[in-house]
Length: 117
Image 1: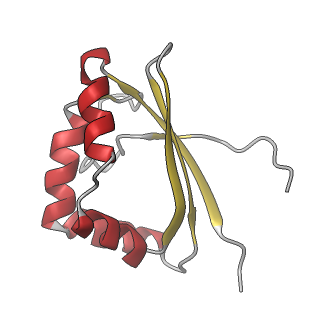
Image 2: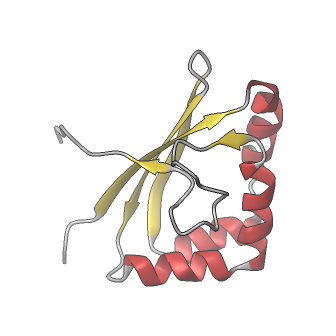
């Protein structure tokens, strides 16, 4: 079995959206959670640095067709609705991105430069 793909991403949170962002993530919609799991994503966490307003996400992908699974994620109407809500609370580091449905992406992926397990 291949090693899981480890993914790290960042996006900026609008200061005025901190309370709403925390509130919606305290009760993520069941359909969104199911889609995440159905797309072979596990160990998914989002962290907030309130000083820089940076959201940092980390997750593991355990499937064999990442692009296909991400297309399934994008096709889910509840996920689209969730992203429309949360994208409005954020500012992307991806140049020219218009939102989570943009092919360029919304969260900027980071390079792993060190790991100690």
